[in-house]
Image (tube, rainbow, N blue to C red; front, side):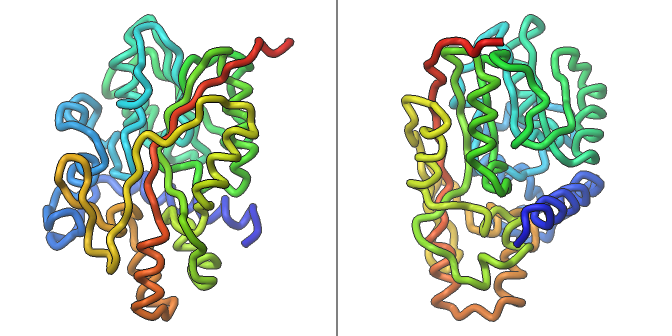
Length: 296
């Protein structure tokens, strides 16, 4: 798949998500059979009910694979950057922590998502959040200007992950830190899945090997890079144990028709489907930018 085709497909898919309000899901959804799919998936990947209740309605689209704000140890007055901010969920959580003396910047490449996030900010009365349209490989953010960088299940969607982490390193202040939740692989996916646009949009075929992901971060200049949590998917898409005892299946990770597309249109055998489930991991990664300031 060509890079521009990938970006176009991702942009189009998430534009549709941004426009779909309110969203409804079948009663027999993957997350415990609840009609409140978005809340279920968010609780399963690490958010608390008070998190969900503290943000404007429509900010949480249930698209994440973790809770990076919980890992980032945010402090009052800090400047936070969210890569792939979507409708603003993590940005608003961060803004609640850093307070009026802090700043939160959310970057997203989908105009409809940026519009939705800005609308949510107005609804919630957030004055310390700034949503910007831009690609993660070319961040509209100044050098050495950010204390903390977060991202939630978005970097796997970018074709050039090395460029994303180089940009992350550029914008972080010396001593700045990052906390990222993302999807990685332990082994190759079937060729049919790797070439599937739907699987790419659903955070599957854009993922890279776990070791390569970590090396890409280190190569950008970060130190202290480590995985602080890793979640496996169960064989057969049945659901896996999360820390709080809830279950989460591959359907929930995608939160779109991706898995159904993989099952129905790619003609994979049951063994290949099991292989897809066993290959995917959700990881939470942290690290620091320990370097002298960039010359300007």
